[in-house]
Image 1: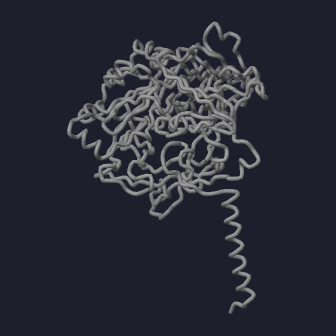
Image 2: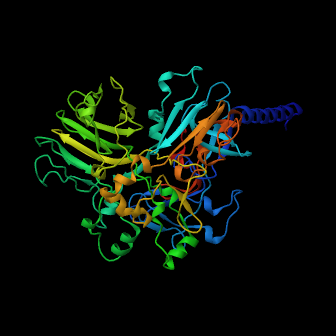
Image 3: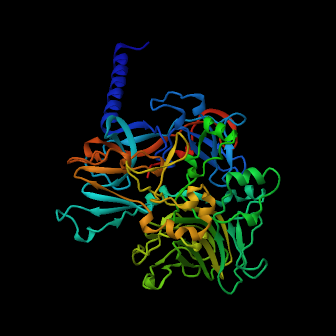
Length: 575
């Protein structure tokens, strides 16, 4: 039987635990639930996890529209009924015959202590009180620091130091592109195409996106594939043998008319520019789907990305079977060719950019890419900087890999095939091919005009004058036709916005730029302070860790029922 002393000791222990928990919550860390998708796919708000019934690709779609800001369910017509796969672009029903549950947002730990003794860093994910309603918690990515002017143009963030000699650097008085550190860039890259899902959609007669059309089938060194997922070359060619990516994305109508009766006609599908398409934003409500069924329209093409994205990355696993020759990784932006050449014998990596004006650009590095073995490669061209990772380690070059303005903000026909791999005398295999893109930040503010989608929705756009084909909703044709791009992507036709950030203030952007209510869209600037910016005393802390995404009720892959089985794959530190 417990004694009085043991009972007292237990009570004291419990009391101390409560006090410590309270102090920890108050001064060190606190748990938050992500309410909306403004930071998707980095952080998920209320959403549905779906798996494409055509290609099997798992993805998420926002379900925030199903509830009010207070979390109360809305009307039946506001429930999400359809969404579109980012891989094969099949629009799938997720109600009725194929109901999908909605899950609450990610639960995260916020470090409330981090900004007590240190200043916030650009690209941190921050939690703060909403400037126009300080009782509401918001979470965004920090893009602008005190005493700066922030500019958004062609999808990038630019910064000018406005300290005017008070510790400022005269060399930074012009706008400089805000580059993301390598670890942040990796976390923020968004999937364009994962070739591991190509075999599943090839059975529908889908055109292969990685295409080796530059050497006859069976020719020495030609790339071959038995399953469209892994490509091989014997390295016997005298020169470079290329494998190139073409962005082939059939529309809703092509799925509807072709797949029901016959395979896709490959010759009829043309490559397009890569755009700021975000699958998370493709949800259609029951009311919208009912309109479509009554014949009013197809899923609105304005929801599927209206802006060309030229900042790209490519990822692959390479398996070298000899130690001779070179492997070449290539990215294209605005007609410029950006290459990384890896020597399989010496491990030397060399970067280059096409054009007579870039002859002096030749950073080199010594790497561990040498001889037979498997290597995971990532090559990126984002924020006017080339980066290379080998086996998850960023490569350090002997000179800067950044570059100046190359007048590459207008796409050309070369951008219809923007990613490539080549073998020059290397016997090798390529697998797990992925094409990724950087976040495209829309250059908008509170006064920006909207593009009307339907009676309830409007989209923000960067175009000052909407290209005629986009005005006619011929989105696929526009992004396939180089003759349309010269005027559309002229400097004078792409919006540019600037925001002055004053002392002790910060500027925040959401990773899901098209759907984020962030500093761009808050109250216009007035007075000594900038109401759309975030005062330092409104900062609560730095987002640290996703500790509890929504749980699964079955063990993945083995499909065994298990209530509240943890979703381990999304538990990670937040970059």
